[in-house]
Length: 138
Image 1 (tube, rainbow, N blue to C red):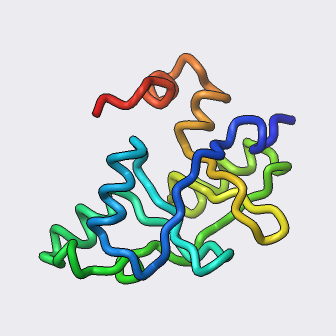
Image 2 (cartoon, rainbow, N blue to C red; image 1 turned 30 degrees about the vertical axis):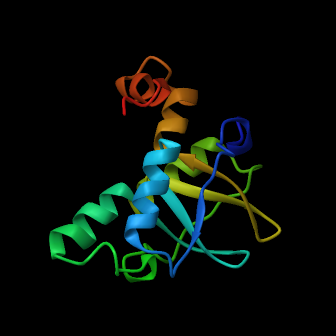
């Protein structure tokens, strides 16, 4: 059995729900990532992606300088353990139509596993794996 912990990323960026969309977009740009995990202290409360900023905020004419992450955060986040089976994690992504799952241990965020991570591990010859394994182009 291949576990989530074998290929999850530990390169995480967390932000508070009161941070602005501009701050999140700048973090994503500076860290060459597509998401930030929104926390309330130690607890994961949601995820905001670059797509969320574009579709849920900018397309709805929300002001990125004053809109807070809490206003667009995807809540009810499904989490996994680093010891969970990778296939089960992929099934959760499919079931809940999500592309990322926070990895927690004893309530603490320790990583993130994405659809791209799973593709690189499970189907290294796939187009998604090829794209996911490449360095960012920005």
